[in-house]
Length: 438
Picture 1 (cartoon, rainbow, N blue to C red):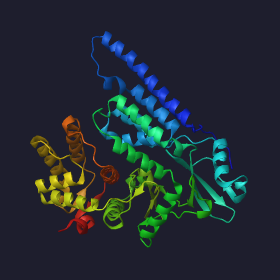
Picture 2 (cartoon, helix red, strand yellow):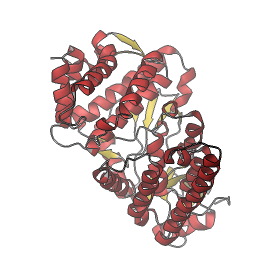
Picture 3 (cartoon, helix red, strand yellow):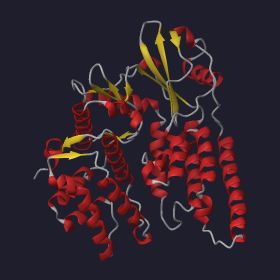
Picture 4 (tube, helix red, strand yellow):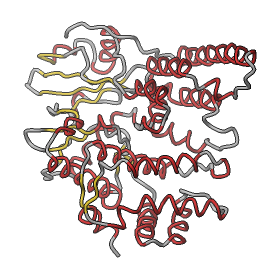
């Protein structure tokens, strides 16, 4: 077990609360100073203008990256893996939260593993690499080889993460509300409650191991995908061991031949439709790091099943109704289906109804046209972004859909970004036909 460096994760609730409280106090002082200066210059800056500065954003991301856990996870969710949706300076800063977190120092790692496996655990391994091969919001991953020859990837949870989830979410939500990103009159309590529930599930590595096994069973015999196998004897609530699957980041396919990119994209689109309509079990985190590429076998490696979840009865069918109505060009049926799904509020004003119909008509255009769609096209993405942001700025349309709808939307949005990143061309009729044909 080689030594390495890292930065300790604050593990006590009080220490984490003080860190976030100090962050809020520091930002408040900066706001007062900046506001006084700009008022002296004859300006009348708004509170969001003063809060959402690159300096404050950098301070927030630095603190969230050190705290890891739910605090960092909420920041990742805010960045949405879509930097082009944000001002360039802020997008670059928030991108830090999608990169690898700074690892635990070896002494802290040893304490965690002593608690999970007992003293002397190192004697079970031929090799245990203390420097992680990946570090994220809830844990970090180490490569190891056991004395019996198993080549493993071992995910180790940061200490204190599970106990701090509720307070972290509350504190970060307070920071976001203070910033003006979350309007005061918008009821986000159901969403925060769901975020806490999901984060508690993600921090339960026993649950993740069960979901990994289930996905492995569902995809058994598929030539296009591979799912790691959890190792029961070394896994528990805060440590998850699985067989190591040698692979590369999915982004390496950006330079692959067009037919390879097209095939992988079609596979990924087909998989997410299976997850919704056939399995009723979806891995809802679309982070690119959760997809890897095995060049020698041509398979996509699927990772990180902590965010896997089932959906309430009827959600898939309501989603099917939305898509069918959109493809058929039936705006009234589409709006009714979106309201039934919870995606839109009831009683939309006529102007808002028309704006939503025009946006949906634009989004469903490629499906209506059928055949091969070129995801390398940027004009559609940019127009959808501009129109969507314009609608989002309308306070009368502010509405929080049910959490399950938001997670579904996030998965489809993240998948679109990945397929667009691959500049794939996909025959949408072939991939989607059996799910949406009348």
